[in-house]
Length: 219
Image (cartoon, rainbow, N blue to C red; front, top):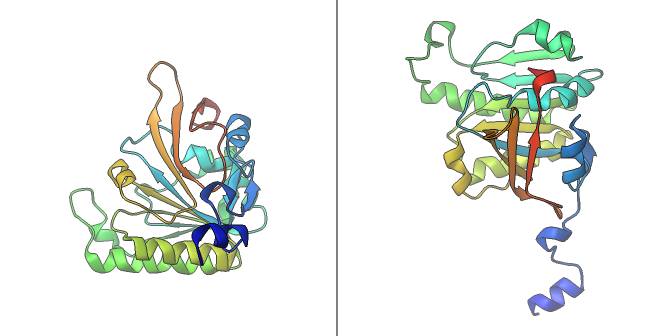
C-alpha cells in the first residue's frame, strides 16, 4: 500500500493535521492566539530550552500552574532554586498544593558539586511517576541528560496521567530531535523588555513561530 493510500484512509497523520490536545490557557492572550490549541497543549510534554537564567522562564508558566493548583497537585522535580512562596501566592498559586522532589542529598546540593548519576536517574523516575499520577495537574523538572527513548516515555506518561509535563533544558538540545508535543526556545528580548519565544516544534498549524511577551507582571 502506498503512502498516499494510507493518508487517504486516514491511517497516517500529517504533522499539521495531527489531533490536538485540549488547550490550557497560558494566561497571555498573544501566546494563546499563536498556539493551535489556544493555549498549552494538555495533556502533553513540553520542552523549554534556554541558556539564560532570570529571564522569566518559570514566570511563563505561573498563570497555568495557578489554575491547576486549585484542584490538583503541582510537583517540581529537582528545581535549581527553592521557590519563593510569597511570589507564588501573589500570582494565585496555592503553595499547599506544591510538592518539591529532589533525590540529591542536601549536603551535595551545592553549585560546585555535580549531581551523581544515581540522583539524576532517581529524579527522572520521580518525574515520570508524577506525570502518571491522576492527582497531579502539572510536573516540572530541570534536566539535561535525556535521550529520545526517555522523552517518549515521558510523553506517554503525560497522556496516561492527563498531566502537563514541562522540562527545562539548555538551548543546545534544540538541535536534537524530540518527541515532545511542543518545544520552545526562550531568550531575553533584544530591543524591548520581556521575553522572546521561538516555537520550533508544535503539533498543529501555527500562525507564526515567534512571540514577544512582557512578563513584568509576573516577575
